[in-house]
Structure formats: structure tokens, C-alpha cells
Amino acid sequence: MNNKMALGAISVTSLIGVIVLGWFVYVRRINKPAAEAVSLNDNNRILDTPKSVAIESLLPAPTSTKQEMTEGISNSNEEAMNVYWLSRINELRQQKQLEPIAFDARLARTAMVWAVHMGTTRVLSHDRPNGEKVSEWIKAYNLPFKSRQPGGGYGNTFTENIGRAYADTSIKSLEKGLDQVLVSMVDEGPEGDHYRTIFSPDWNRYGGGFYFDPIAKDRVRVYMAFHYASLQ
Image (cartoon, rainbow, N blue to C red; front, side):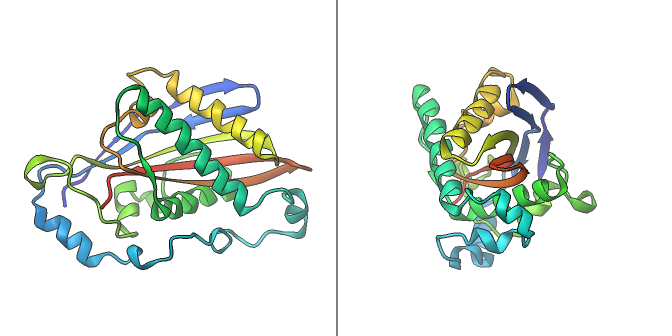
């Protein structure tokens, strides 16, 4: 399958309490016959997984010190962050008469895997281990990408945005961190890669992953991965 990945320019925005660094990754499948989409369906295994994602199963076992320092963080925080981010994205899309995006647990899983990787390595990057391309990395999850062009061809089917913010363990502080990241992305304007992600008509599904790296009592560095896709 012919994949083309366009890496956007790095955008660094310094705000109080937030650092955002992102590359924009497009995975393109162009002019592929509908039969290949059927093949993706036939090989799909992710669809059989439960709707709820066991976040703890994706995280490394924390030390007792980290458990104490992130005492206020829970799965409910991560779920609330996904709900909040998606609501903000859809509000922006509505302003441009774009279709809303729905939450997808499969993308939350892939995003969580990458957020954990960034958080445990403390490196904010799209670069996969061993030089693996993002297009190859996402294939391992057998997601059923959806044809969105006449004749069964593929347009943009997957992209990843990443960010990092500092917050305390309250949901209000975490939401503020999300807002700061979002403002930084939107402020890029129509030529910015993150801006184009938010306002792209290609996506119909979203899932976010968040890793909380403790830096002090009730204070965390949050690594964020936002996965958007066109899925069946």
C-alpha cells in the first residue's frame, strides 16, 4: 500500500506553564481500490476489543514515590480531558460548518501508547523507536481506515498531534493546560499544521492519550498525544 507521510514544521510556543512542540504527521493513501479497504476490515482485530480502555495496563508500574506524587490523577481525569478536548475541537469545527468528530476508544489506545512512550522517555517527538515511520507504526493496530474519496480512494486517513503542559492534579488545571495547547495550535493560522488538523474535513474519529510525569507534590508535566483518523 502506497503511503506518503508529510512532516510539518516544528512549532514551539512558550506560554506560562505550558510548552507545546509538535510535528504534524499525515498518512496518505491515494487512489487505492475499495478492495484494499475490505482487506483492512478482514484483518482487523481492534474492533473486538472492549470499548473502555484499561489505561493502567498501558502504563509502567509506578514507584511508591510517583504513586504518592500523582495521587490526585485517575482514569476519570483522563476521560474528562478527552471529553473536554473533543468538545473544544468540535466547537471550533462547527464555526466553519465542519462535521463533528466522535470519540474512538481504538484511537485513545494508540494515543495512550505514544503518550506513555513520550512521558517515560521525557522526549516530545513523533519519532518512533528504531526509525520506524508513523505510517508503519499505526499499521500494527490494524485500524479499519475508511475510504473518503469517490471511487474508493483514500484521502488523509490518520494524523498525530502532540503537546506538553504543566499543571496541578485538579481537572480545572488540566483543562487550562489543554486550552493553552489548543490556543497555541489555533494561533498558527491556516498555514499551520496543527491548525489544519483541527479544521480538516478528513477526520471522523478522535482519541487522546495523556501521561502524567510528576515533578512535585500535586504538580505534573503532562505529555499529550492526539490521534485523528478516518475510520469505519
